[in-house]
Length: 241
Image (tube, rainbow, N blue to C red; front, side, top):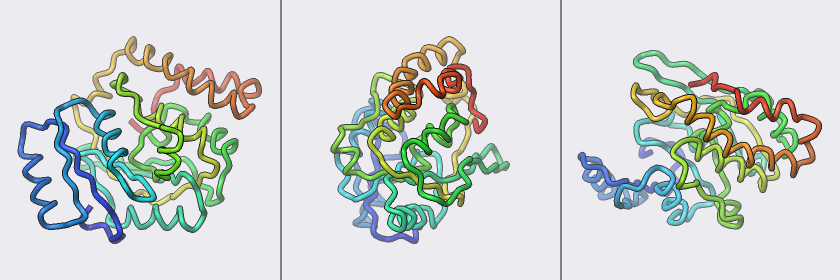
């Protein structure tokens, strides 16, 4: 984050009970750069960690980064500029998936136009299980919307808590836009949680999330029209993982 060309940032480094040198490294950066703030807590999982950061953040926008990934130097600048230019409540970007020395670019929205809820939700139906729509790290959110509607990650979920967060956010966001530049590098590691999921566990989680998914389309008046596509979420697999 220190290399970001957008300088007006607050960086919250949340140490989720790591037993390695992570805390010391975070504190070293905070000593060198006043924009960095270190939050040390007992291990409680990614959802609780993100929720704590949301509570502590003070900026206009929120951007999330996982510990083993990295950003293009222009990532924050491009996301913020797109949000400011369009007034969009959510900016979603292409990203890179990194496996060893192989880098692949993923992203689905090619239009540069600003979309309303119904149009964005219609695009989501095409790739309902993709990382592109499901994760939090390739997006820029308005903090006031998150706080106003008390949107948080579900700490009871160990997988797809980010997709539930996004489904809730989409309910209240009014405008959306895409950034085709891949600004985030997602490192796919062997033995990760997503790689260890069983079919049963995946289906159970999807069934729980499906109520949020269906509620979104019901609220937008799209449920009856697109019911077959909506139910396809239950068997859809991610093309970018």
